[in-house]
Amino acid sequence: MPNKSSYNKIIDNWIKARNSAIVNKPVIDFADYINSKGTIFDIGCGTGLPIAKYLSDCDFSITGIDQSVKMIETAKSAGIQNSVFQTCDFFDFETDQKFNGIIAWDSLFHFPKERQSEIYSKVYHLLAPGDYFLFTHGKEEDEHTDSMFGEQFYYSCLSKDYVLDLMKELGFEIIYSVENFVEEKDQRDWVVLARKK
Image 1 (tube, rainbow, N blue to C red):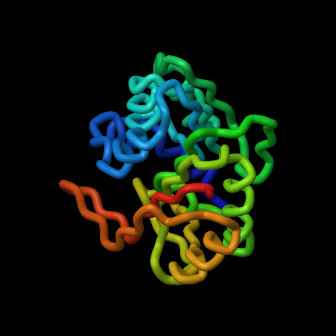
Image 2: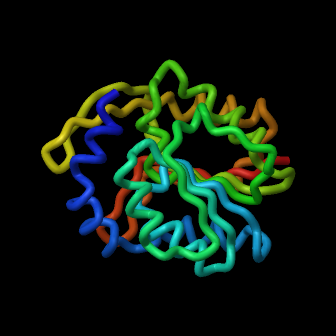
């Protein structure tokens, strides 16, 4: 997959884009659901801005991972309080900690299609009972490459119905499921907030 090296190459453009990006309302809702001083795991945290910074400012402790060395270097230098950032593949991430919140905002679609179904059981295992998982996703099963800032990126996803069935089977309760989410200039095919029963 080209994504790791592609993100390293576009880091300067990415910083410009993300440093001025809004914190989307679902992220704010997610933070409101979690008890104060909770722990949050950010899958594909990028540079930490604006999401990890916002969550840190809400008094949460953040663990952020990303495959891009340049993204993690930038996140570490951003001065975000109560945060730990590491270069890591999600499937290689191991901890005994159970998080109060897990967020995957614009990251799951970079995972290999053949491993997409593994995501949800791992997230379920990493979450504390009664706590929350927020993610963005495509609606239709898909696998393709596309360009961003002149570099190629890989994307994939499973169908919305398959993911919902899988999550319910694991023991997730769907708090909300929003298709065609739009806020200012931002658009997402599908936004889901789920809770581990």
